[in-house]
Image (cartoon, rainbow, N blue to C red):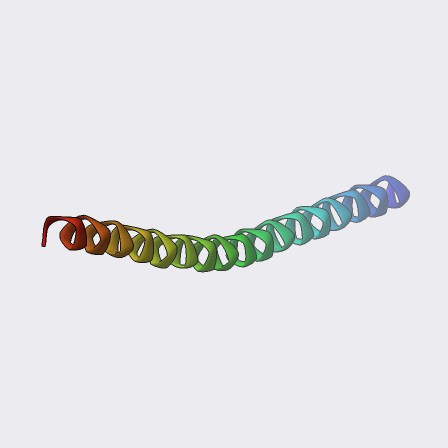
Length: 64
């Protein structure tokens, strides 16, 4: 009976440890990805703002 109890305890501990590790890795991946995506979006927005500024300048130059 004790062996079965020990076996059950080991299964529960290993299962909980596995779940904890998976959740931790998922959170780390999410945080890293969100930082990368935010940096990429900021870079793209600045590029688009520059493109729009150049377009407006060229349109104004042709009208003047």
